[in-house]
Amino acid sequence: MSIAIANGDELETYCAGSGRYGQDFPVNPDMLFQAGSVSKPMFALTLLRYVDKGLIDLDADISGIVPEFVKKGPVTFPALLSHTAGYNLHGFPGYPAKHEPLSLEDVLNGKGVTPKLRRIRPYGKQHMYSGGGYTLAELAFTRITGTTLREAFRKEVVEPLGLKRTGFFQPLDEELVGGAAFGGRLAEKEDPAHGYHYYPEHAAAGLWTTPTELVKIGRALSKSYREGGLLRKETARRMLTPFMDSYGLGIQSFRGDIGYHDGWNEGFLTTWLFSLREDLCVAVMFNRSTDELDWKQSYIAIELFQTAEEDLAEKPSKRSLKALCGKYEHPDDAEICVDEVFMQDGKLYAKFLGDDGEFTGQLYPIGKKTFGRKGGFAKIVFGKDCLTFNGITCKKL
Image 1 (cartoon, rainbow, N blue to C red):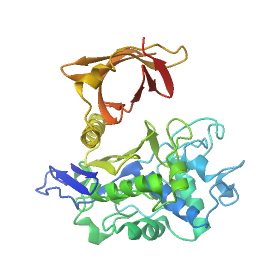
Image 2 (image 1 turned 180 degrees about the vertical axis):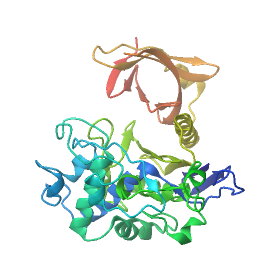
Image 3 (image 1 turned 90 degrees about the vertical axis):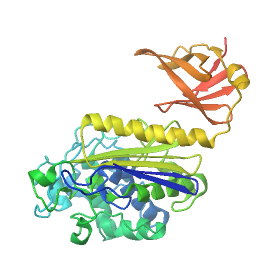
Image 4 (image 1 turned 120 degrees about the vertical axis):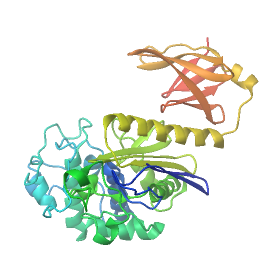
């Protein structure tokens, strides 16, 4: 396990366990991990840097750039980055580290271990997660720019942010192997000297990094969203505004003020989230991938993030908390609503009603009369004898 928490100018790290199964190989903050699908927002960020420079028209039809994979247009980068272009290939299993190199065209033509790319849903009508769509976007990007994603990312993200241990290293450079974690038991199963998989699908799954450098990128995106920086403010806001099913351009946006993505490569898990309101980012990386650990890692990251959020917020008095308590009206068209707010053991709770029944969650302050829900991404804003939840204002009864 490797964790980093950036809170303002403070950076905390925590490491535990071995970077390689069965070996005395203590994890340290500089140890490289595969980031899985957190590669996707890094590709989107790189592409948007080109957009800001006027080198790529974000909304142009790119079907003519990749005609062999688009039988019927149009296709745009926003559709591919928001997973709404209708393509198959949810994810990629990777290849043994010493596998012969594969091109993006090889992958998309089904010459590896995954099927050929094809559109299986109507274009722009629904969200369907597609690593294949990202690989198509990467191919179009490389053809437009005449450069590889590895090189473009280095110039547009790594160098401006002063990163040292992050890149689309596929395959991983031999001089970096000594400081890299191995994934799960891949060294035992496949290659003792290279215990990780090779991912030719760089934009979808090819990033190597550390939690410390992930939080630097998260802070840069947060600053861009708030005031501009690595990206123009307008560009960052478009990236982080949900297009469909909470997904923007390469990244999810929760609660209206949190950027989020997680990742799963064979033997590796990553959870990465950052605030859009303040300078706060958390990254958690494991070198083991199981369903149980996936959920546990997400909960760890969310708990660390919310604890930091609460520490930064002004502490409300018990009197002000009690004034918020009571029953609230139920809107007829809401899938989920707040039924009641109450105090218990000096803490504020809300009872939620939804299509799946009712549940209770602890609330914590994140701003003036604004509260989040512990363990989830709900946000409740209290007004005079009312509250607003999911954009709906409900009167206190």
